Length: 192
Image 1: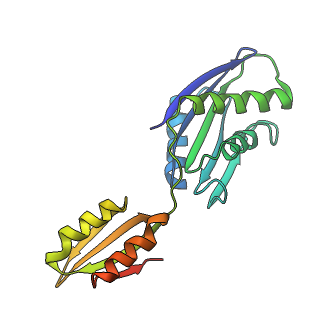
Image 2: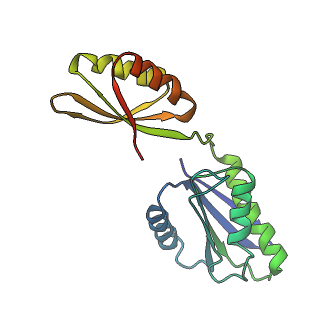
């Protein structure tokens, strides 16, 4: 669930939107929404980390006209330091009349994201494995039970001459789940 936090530094207002993001295009749409909500703001600086923060798939920032490295980079570095992935941060700044200098800007932008992180409900990143499971119709309810028992989710089901179920499982549950199904004669394949 996105959170919004507001901080102030020498009469400049910093409004941070922080929310879950797994898609860059969706984040850019959110940025457009924030720009429309605060059209008279001086800057809309961003930081984006998609994937595991230890090894992100996408990691980028934008200073939106602030001095290079004074806004987006400290925002992103804080997200990475806190081990937060699949998250986007947009900090909107209203200039208060006093120049903060590069160091002051870095502290203010990092502080704005930090305030939002304090209010955010964070969930640990759990690596998953996607798989396709094929069973007969009589085995579907047992399969659903096992997916649930191994903390997985059924993503999609196709009914043809058999049941074809796309499942997502925590990586640490994969081996036991796979062995259980193979032991019961059910076809299981990793996807991707």
